[in-house]
Amino acid sequence: MTFRKYLVLAGVTVFASAGDAMLSHGMKQIGSISLNHLQSVIWAVLNPWVAVGILLLLAFFATYMTALSWADLTYVLPATSLGYVILALVARFALHEHVSPMRWLGIAFITSGVGFIAGGPEITVHRHGESLETSSDVDGIPLLAKEARSGAPRVRGMES
Amino acid sequence: MKTIYTWAAILAIVVASVIGDVLLARAMKQVGDVDELRRRVGFLAVVGRTLSNPTFLLGVTAMAVAFFSLLFALSWGDVSLVAPAAASLTFIGNAIAAKVFLHERVDRRRWIAATLVAAGVALLAG
Image 1: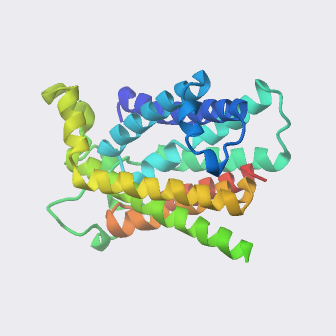
Image 2: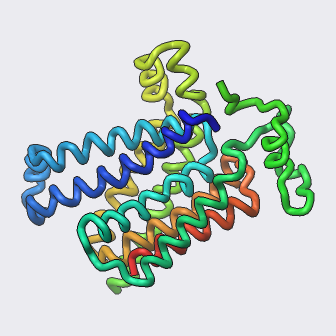
């Protein structure tokens, strides 16, 4: 993992949570949209919060696709789930909302989940088309994790 | 009856977004390392290559289905049930689907991560 790649993962996290927050703020200003007047959804993009929210979500999608091009899905998803934590912290310290003990516990769970994958390899390396399922784990540490740590040759995800 | 509808819609969201995520992940592996490609062929070529990938388009379609299922689910159930239930089940579903369909090495470390994040997301809504 290069610094640049961590930056892309941070982008996924920040763009997703900031985009969602802006969209929800903008849509609350507009008020509820009736199913009989769906065309008013189109006018919603004229609200600056909604417009910026959409731009941020486009940026989220671009960074998410970039991350998926060099990392496993099961690495990218937990790694970018810190967005939930950011939103809760913004709610507590910027908007001064009450964060219940259950939510703090949730934040702790997500953060430790991210910690679990952070030390591991970001991509599964398939060697010579050999099935990964057959390679044996030695004391619970997968072959690939050890390989990545020892800096053995890698097919993809080569650092530049 | 409403509860059954809500959970059916939640299930639809989870299935559609897992299919979407798996297809998008596979598509981007086919496209190749975007950072590297951009240096070689330029930004627009990378965008063109991604948008013309059939797997990518299928993935985006599945994501659209997931989005509309979410709208249905929200019209039947509370957002405080639908959003966290769908998000946390999607994390677990993705871990299983990535192992089965993408042959990702989902080791103990990644199972624990997916489970902790799923539990955390469920708790955040509480």
